[in-house]
Length: 511
Image 1 (cartoon, rainbow, N blue to C red):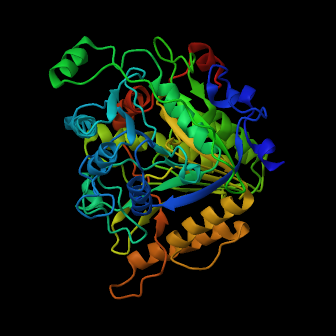
Image 2: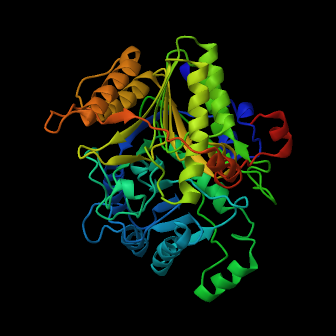
């Protein structure tokens, strides 16, 4: 069976304390019989979410987890579709609304402490319960982004959404990449309305129960939401509720709805006090990539916000050396999301080193591109997607860096299904290449290369030349001085890409 060849076993997950695998009576560390729909771009996801939440009734259960939540983000663009309004209206109808939102850092540091707090206040005022969760490693975040909707007596409506899309500004874009009318301030190169490329999954079937279990494990963690006495005092001043009401008993998993096997993959850092459901953390994201890359023979296609770290590079280099026909294509942001000396250089120094090592390990078999919209504005690639040989796909919140593989809280779904994998890769390729034609696996590498060359040549051509249809350009890695590298490299390693593994795993250089 294909899934058994690609997926982790419960033992390979390396976390015997989780309920995630023990809850499966068949002994598998995944579920069969799901139907998974890719929602490419925030506009598609937000529209589907708004429609589903609007259908919820008294007694239903809405669970949401987010890294950033802007209460005024309009999910459909219409007044009344704001995130806070949608969830608060559901709570007022009698829906049991529960939320776990990362407490975040100060807005002055380009984070979202105020927005996340206000989202929780609006939900709580309507009778729901949304808490700010800082149960993370020092300097870490809860980076998961998912929503679960359960309907007692109407299980056919049960659904889970998970992926890379936060419920916040700048995310409501589509394939035209004109950007969200409610933009988030970013680096100047992305303009006043930054184009945004992202992917979420809609999942029905038994895997909904697994996604719900991820929420319940975090919700039921008895430790204080923060270890800081200062935060306790601020919470008291704001009237925030610390005790969490118990969740209702979990419903049976929904019945099978389709042909897709789904395995959930997670990262939890090894933190002081530990998680009851992951005392030494969990690194099944990293372990799943290692297993899938070990089976790769033709193409690793990835879209990601980052491509950093020696640990990530080692996995990819090993795969490329093991399989002489294997090629790697990466679609990444042209530039970091924030300007400034402390953001720009550390964001690029490790990516440049990693790409250099990959090119050296597999000359002519590695290519990295950035995307732009029809007006020539760079598109910020926030998607976290990996497709291996049109057999195995992951979509989730984790990036290709050490932070996401070891330190922060992450959640992704793997789908081992050839038709699903091929269709998602081709859907993304049609957007990037500006074509309606299907792209066979064996032609993918060369088609991206030809399209990017054509667009690069057009940018150098005289004004008035017809623009080619593609959106990709070769990724530039600006030269950085030796002095810049001297300070940016340790800053990147310590602040931007920390290591959340237990000491023994660090010493053994394994996950």
